[in-house]
Image (cartoon, rainbow, N blue to C red; front, side, top):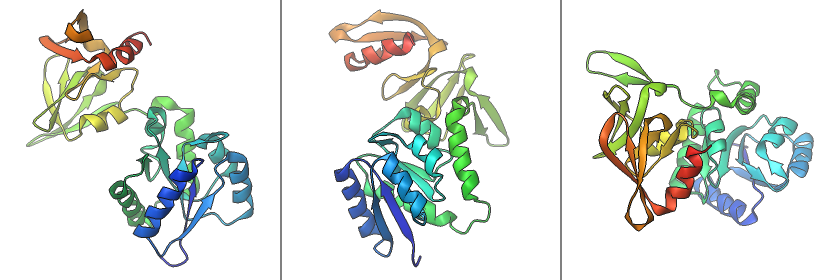
Length: 257
Protein backbone atom coordinates (compact mmCIF):
# COMPACT_ATOMS: atom_id res chain seq x y z
CA UNK A 1 0.00 0.00 0.00
CA UNK A 2 2.37 2.67 -1.27
CA UNK A 3 1.61 6.34 -0.51
CA UNK A 4 -1.11 5.23 1.89
CA UNK A 5 -2.16 7.90 4.37
CA UNK A 6 -3.95 7.41 7.67
CA UNK A 7 -4.87 10.21 10.07
CA UNK A 8 -5.81 10.37 13.74
CA UNK A 9 -8.35 12.91 14.97
CA UNK A 10 -8.32 12.71 18.76
CA UNK A 11 -8.59 15.50 21.34
CA UNK A 12 -6.60 13.71 24.07
CA UNK A 13 -2.92 13.93 23.14
CA UNK A 14 -1.78 10.87 25.19
CA UNK A 15 -4.45 8.73 23.52
CA UNK A 16 -3.49 10.08 20.09
CA UNK A 17 0.20 9.35 20.69
CA UNK A 18 -0.57 5.84 21.91
CA UNK A 19 -2.64 5.07 18.82
CA UNK A 20 0.08 6.61 16.61
CA UNK A 21 2.77 4.44 18.24
CA UNK A 22 0.81 1.21 17.85
CA UNK A 23 -0.08 2.01 14.25
CA UNK A 24 3.58 2.70 13.43
CA UNK A 25 4.46 -0.69 14.84
CA UNK A 26 1.69 -2.53 12.99
CA UNK A 27 1.96 -0.68 9.66
CA UNK A 28 5.37 1.05 9.45
CA UNK A 29 4.90 1.69 5.71
CA UNK A 30 1.90 3.95 6.29
CA UNK A 31 2.19 7.73 6.37
CA UNK A 32 0.52 8.78 9.63
CA UNK A 33 -0.85 12.21 10.49
CA UNK A 34 -1.91 13.64 13.86
CA UNK A 35 -4.68 16.16 13.20
CA UNK A 36 -5.92 18.99 15.45
CA UNK A 37 -8.25 17.57 18.09
CA UNK A 38 -11.00 20.15 17.67
CA UNK A 39 -13.72 20.47 15.05
CA UNK A 40 -12.95 23.98 13.83
CA UNK A 41 -9.29 23.36 13.03
CA UNK A 42 -9.91 19.85 11.71
CA UNK A 43 -12.56 21.10 9.28
CA UNK A 44 -10.17 23.77 8.00
CA UNK A 45 -7.46 21.12 7.54
CA UNK A 46 -9.82 18.93 5.49
CA UNK A 47 -10.80 21.93 3.36
CA UNK A 48 -7.18 22.61 2.47
CA UNK A 49 -5.56 19.18 2.24
CA UNK A 50 -6.07 15.89 0.39
CA UNK A 51 -8.17 13.62 2.56
CA UNK A 52 -6.40 10.59 4.07
CA UNK A 53 -7.37 7.10 2.97
CA UNK A 54 -8.31 6.09 6.50
CA UNK A 55 -9.34 8.25 9.45
CA UNK A 56 -9.31 7.18 13.10
CA UNK A 57 -11.96 9.48 14.54
CA UNK A 58 -12.62 10.11 18.22
CA UNK A 59 -16.35 10.39 18.84
CA UNK A 60 -16.03 13.16 21.45
CA UNK A 61 -13.84 16.10 20.43
CA UNK A 62 -12.83 19.12 22.51
CA UNK A 63 -15.45 21.46 21.00
CA UNK A 64 -18.23 19.04 20.09
CA UNK A 65 -18.66 15.56 18.69
CA UNK A 66 -17.65 13.76 15.55
CA UNK A 67 -21.18 14.05 14.13
CA UNK A 68 -20.68 17.80 13.71
CA UNK A 69 -17.25 17.26 12.18
CA UNK A 70 -18.59 14.75 9.63
CA UNK A 71 -21.38 17.07 8.55
CA UNK A 72 -19.00 20.01 8.03
CA UNK A 73 -15.87 18.34 6.66
CA UNK A 74 -17.54 15.59 4.59
CA UNK A 75 -14.36 13.45 4.62
CA UNK A 76 -13.90 10.96 1.79
CA UNK A 77 -11.80 8.82 4.14
CA UNK A 78 -12.97 5.47 5.39
CA UNK A 79 -13.70 5.70 9.12
CA UNK A 80 -12.73 3.78 12.22
CA UNK A 81 -14.22 5.33 15.36
CA UNK A 82 -12.60 5.41 18.79
CA UNK A 83 -14.54 5.84 22.02
CA UNK A 84 -14.19 5.39 25.76
CA UNK A 85 -17.50 3.47 25.59
CA UNK A 86 -20.47 5.42 24.45
CA UNK A 87 -23.51 3.23 23.91
CA UNK A 88 -25.17 5.78 21.65
CA UNK A 89 -22.15 5.99 19.41
CA UNK A 90 -21.65 2.25 19.28
CA UNK A 91 -25.22 1.71 18.14
CA UNK A 92 -24.99 4.48 15.56
CA UNK A 93 -21.72 3.41 13.99
CA UNK A 94 -21.20 -0.33 14.42
CA UNK A 95 -22.90 -1.15 11.11
CA UNK A 96 -21.91 1.71 8.82
CA UNK A 97 -18.30 2.43 9.79
CA UNK A 98 -15.44 0.03 9.17
CA UNK A 99 -15.22 -0.63 12.89
CA UNK A 100 -15.05 1.05 16.29
CA UNK A 101 -12.34 0.76 18.94
CA UNK A 102 -12.85 1.11 22.68
CA UNK A 103 -10.26 3.10 24.58
CA UNK A 104 -7.71 2.38 25.87
CA UNK A 105 -6.81 0.98 22.46
CA UNK A 106 -6.13 -2.74 22.44
CA UNK A 107 -3.47 -3.76 19.89
CA UNK A 108 -5.14 -7.04 18.78
CA UNK A 109 -8.46 -5.20 18.23
CA UNK A 110 -6.67 -2.45 16.33
CA UNK A 111 -5.01 -5.04 14.10
CA UNK A 112 -8.42 -6.66 13.55
CA UNK A 113 -9.90 -3.32 12.47
CA UNK A 114 -6.98 -2.63 10.13
CA UNK A 115 -7.25 -6.09 8.59
CA UNK A 116 -10.97 -5.57 8.11
CA UNK A 117 -10.25 -2.31 6.29
CA UNK A 118 -7.59 -3.89 4.08
CA UNK A 119 -9.90 -6.76 3.18
CA UNK A 120 -12.45 -4.40 1.62
CA UNK A 121 -9.99 -2.23 -0.32
CA UNK A 122 -10.74 -2.30 -4.02
CA UNK A 123 -14.28 -3.52 -3.49
CA UNK A 124 -16.30 -1.78 -6.23
CA UNK A 125 -19.45 -1.96 -4.10
CA UNK A 126 -18.07 0.53 -1.59
CA UNK A 127 -18.84 4.15 -2.44
CA UNK A 128 -17.33 6.67 -0.05
CA UNK A 129 -19.97 9.36 -0.29
CA UNK A 130 -22.72 6.84 0.28
CA UNK A 131 -20.72 5.39 3.15
CA UNK A 132 -20.70 8.77 4.90
CA UNK A 133 -24.36 9.40 4.11
CA UNK A 134 -25.29 6.10 5.75
CA UNK A 135 -23.53 7.13 8.96
CA UNK A 136 -25.16 10.56 9.04
CA UNK A 137 -28.55 9.03 8.25
CA UNK A 138 -28.17 6.58 11.14
CA UNK A 139 -27.71 9.57 13.45
CA UNK A 140 -30.84 11.27 12.15
CA UNK A 141 -32.95 8.11 12.41
CA UNK A 142 -31.90 6.43 15.66
CA UNK A 143 -34.82 4.01 15.48
CA UNK A 144 -32.88 2.19 12.76
CA UNK A 145 -29.92 1.58 15.03
CA UNK A 146 -31.15 -1.43 16.96
CA UNK A 147 -31.62 -5.02 15.95
CA UNK A 148 -35.25 -6.10 15.48
CA UNK A 149 -34.87 -9.78 14.59
CA UNK A 150 -32.48 -12.71 14.50
CA UNK A 151 -31.96 -15.40 11.91
CA UNK A 152 -31.93 -18.76 13.69
CA UNK A 153 -30.21 -21.66 11.97
CA UNK A 154 -31.68 -25.13 12.48
CA UNK A 155 -30.58 -28.56 11.31
CA UNK A 156 -32.89 -28.62 8.30
CA UNK A 157 -34.31 -25.09 8.12
CA UNK A 158 -33.76 -21.51 9.24
CA UNK A 159 -36.29 -19.10 10.66
CA UNK A 160 -36.53 -15.56 12.04
CA UNK A 161 -37.02 -14.64 15.68
CA UNK A 162 -38.45 -11.20 16.49
CA UNK A 163 -36.74 -9.27 19.29
CA UNK A 164 -40.16 -8.15 20.52
CA UNK A 165 -40.98 -11.78 21.31
CA UNK A 166 -37.93 -12.29 23.52
CA UNK A 167 -38.29 -12.07 27.30
CA UNK A 168 -34.63 -12.50 28.18
CA UNK A 169 -31.27 -13.84 27.08
CA UNK A 170 -29.00 -15.96 29.21
CA UNK A 171 -25.56 -17.51 28.86
CA UNK A 172 -24.62 -21.00 30.03
CA UNK A 173 -21.40 -22.89 29.28
CA UNK A 174 -20.45 -20.16 26.77
CA UNK A 175 -23.70 -20.69 24.83
CA UNK A 176 -26.25 -17.88 24.49
CA UNK A 177 -29.97 -18.62 24.63
CA UNK A 178 -32.93 -16.39 23.78
CA UNK A 179 -36.10 -17.22 25.72
CA UNK A 180 -39.44 -16.04 24.32
CA UNK A 181 -42.49 -15.02 26.33
CA UNK A 182 -44.06 -18.34 25.31
CA UNK A 183 -41.16 -20.18 26.98
CA UNK A 184 -39.33 -21.37 23.86
CA UNK A 185 -35.52 -21.33 23.85
CA UNK A 186 -33.36 -20.51 20.82
CA UNK A 187 -29.57 -20.73 20.54
CA UNK A 188 -27.81 -17.60 19.21
CA UNK A 189 -24.29 -17.26 17.87
CA UNK A 190 -23.79 -13.93 19.69
CA UNK A 191 -22.38 -13.26 23.16
CA UNK A 192 -24.31 -11.22 25.72
CA UNK A 193 -21.74 -8.46 25.25
CA UNK A 194 -22.50 -8.28 21.52
CA UNK A 195 -26.23 -8.43 22.17
CA UNK A 196 -25.96 -5.51 24.59
CA UNK A 197 -24.45 -3.43 21.78
CA UNK A 198 -27.15 -4.37 19.25
CA UNK A 199 -30.33 -4.12 21.35
CA UNK A 200 -32.25 -1.02 22.38
CA UNK A 201 -30.95 -0.08 25.87
CA UNK A 202 -34.38 1.33 26.73
CA UNK A 203 -35.84 -2.16 26.33
CA UNK A 204 -33.02 -4.46 27.52
CA UNK A 205 -30.83 -4.36 30.61
CA UNK A 206 -27.67 -6.36 31.35
CA UNK A 207 -28.55 -7.57 34.83
CA UNK A 208 -25.33 -9.53 35.40
CA UNK A 209 -22.87 -11.72 33.52
CA UNK A 210 -25.51 -14.35 32.82
CA UNK A 211 -28.73 -12.45 32.06
CA UNK A 212 -29.93 -9.73 29.69
CA UNK A 213 -33.54 -8.79 30.48
CA UNK A 214 -36.42 -7.26 28.54
CA UNK A 215 -38.35 -4.58 30.42
CA UNK A 216 -41.51 -6.57 29.69
CA UNK A 217 -40.16 -9.71 31.33
CA UNK A 218 -40.07 -8.29 34.85
CA UNK A 219 -42.76 -9.73 37.14
CA UNK A 220 -41.74 -8.17 40.47
CA UNK A 221 -38.73 -7.15 42.54
CA UNK A 222 -37.77 -8.07 46.11
CA UNK A 223 -34.96 -6.88 48.43
CA UNK A 224 -32.00 -9.19 49.04
CA UNK A 225 -29.15 -9.21 51.55
CA UNK A 226 -26.05 -6.98 51.35
CA UNK A 227 -27.96 -4.23 49.57
CA UNK A 228 -28.81 -6.36 46.55
CA UNK A 229 -32.23 -6.92 44.97
CA UNK A 230 -33.79 -9.93 43.26
CA UNK A 231 -35.82 -9.67 40.07
CA UNK A 232 -38.44 -12.28 39.21
CA UNK A 233 -39.07 -12.65 35.49
CA UNK A 234 -41.61 -14.09 33.08
CA UNK A 235 -42.09 -16.71 31.72
CA UNK A 236 -39.89 -18.30 34.40
CA UNK A 237 -41.55 -17.55 37.76
CA UNK A 238 -38.86 -19.52 39.62
CA UNK A 239 -36.02 -17.56 38.00
CA UNK A 240 -34.47 -15.11 40.44
CA UNK A 241 -32.04 -12.63 38.89
CA UNK A 242 -29.74 -10.92 41.39
CA UNK A 243 -28.86 -7.28 40.82
CA UNK A 244 -25.67 -6.21 42.58
CA UNK A 245 -25.57 -3.16 44.84
CA UNK A 246 -23.35 -1.40 42.29
CA UNK A 247 -25.95 -1.84 39.53
CA UNK A 248 -29.10 -1.02 41.51
CA UNK A 249 -28.99 2.71 40.74
CA UNK A 250 -28.54 2.03 37.02
CA UNK A 251 -31.30 -0.58 37.11
CA UNK A 252 -33.78 1.75 38.84
CA UNK A 253 -32.98 4.52 36.37
CA UNK A 254 -33.64 2.08 33.52
CA UNK A 255 -37.02 1.10 35.03
CA UNK A 256 -38.07 4.73 35.42
CA UNK A 257 -36.87 5.96 32.02
